[in-house]
Length: 349
Image 1 (cartoon, rainbow, N blue to C red):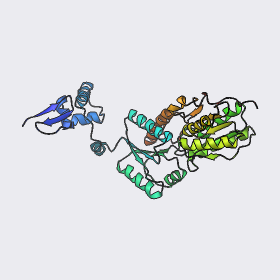
Image 2: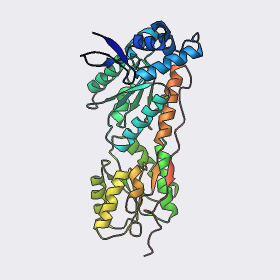
Image 3: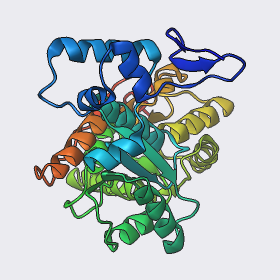
Image 4: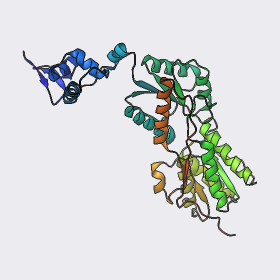
């Protein structure tokens, strides 16, 4: 039986057997160096000559070699792995945050392990954290929109640096887009257009972002000495927005709606069209998030943009800074109002 290196597949094969992933010894053989030299290259040892390093990295690329992370942990005591604990990855905001953090982590040479909470009770939180810590994560990002999850996390001794994407955190671990400022931008825009009868379609009451956006809405109305009515409560879905839109149209009197997210705003727009009314002539609508589809709504949606890419970059930078004994906190990221065709001055009556 003969054995050879399959240079284009990155696997060592034996005739009549299945391929296996390339090993560090395969890389050493192809590069013409010892496996200890390959290990030094992987660990960025300063004694390696540039030409030797180039031969080793070329061999790794040819063989499609992927270092054994568990072995590197034993050698370096560093896993270069970050953990993400999330209680909901189905909605646009949390899912976008995860994507942004993963991209920023990869750019910094880290991998990411993500665990989704099965529920928000303390036992589930403990089990999820234990799972992540078992992966030897060096730091942790907590995407916990529900206030009860954030409260449980803050009471635990996690043992590794962590950052929460939690607008209502006490600031010692938090990094977020400024939700209150974003809500004030949306509300101020409607007020500057001349609207004074503005409804707020809020998100679920146990989500910190929903609470922060409600507070921003109320604060901006108070600054203009405009009374705020009771908010309509939604669940982030377009169906909830549709029901709220029907209710507002049946009730009458409202000229504008600030929806706590774009999906619910989509439902409001659907209700307006179904009723034979016009947006923005009969009802102006502002959303929140600037999801990619928002520009294609009918009409295109005025909304508040959250820069999730910047959030991911700052989150990873803050976490890695803490690992190196650096910065402990960061200022909130400023949101941006995106003007489109779903808002206009109220129709003269």
